[in-house]
Length: 266
Image (tube, rainbow, N blue to C red; front, side):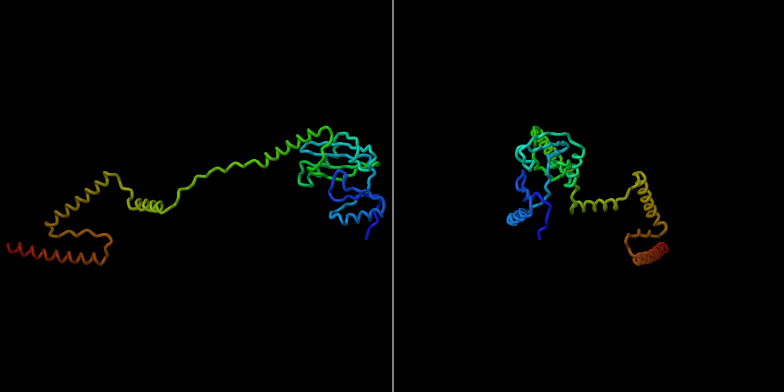
């Protein structure tokens, strides 16, 4: 089913630029002929209403640099961007700057982009095309625009492609191996087996007192007739200590009897 559009219309085939692939269709018969051509072209097409224009406006943005140019055909062609045309740089109105900034934000912040605006004979303005970095540089300021593009690219490369500084090296902890574990265990064992000793004078005094007490006990043994009990052994069971004490008492009894018999006979 073919709808009956309002003629004339402009049929654009594919994404060509510079006036290529654009056809003005004045009636339905021509539109059907063009539809058969598009059917075998293996690409898409768009249809726009024809605007009887006075001139078109080229608005460009390169970084923070904005420019606007007015282009007016003097060859009589309905395509204002082809053939002979008069080009003039004009001041940038606020609305043009707002338009191109909005377009840049729609595509996640384009740094380089351009708008094509057609101004009809009724004075109304129509945005018919948006270009990214594939824009056309116009006028006598093309070299200046190229420098702006080069400076912008270098700035972006320095900001994004700069190599990151390596992270600061952290001190490597000592390896935990069998030797270090054995060393820590031996130090712990050494510290437990050797508690802090008192000063040398006190320790020597304590040793002298114990030696003196042992000497006095040994010297007084013959006068009392009793053999001193042997010192208790560490880590000895209680039953073994009782057996030793009973044997000692039996020995002392035998000694008393022997001494009584010797001294009694004398």
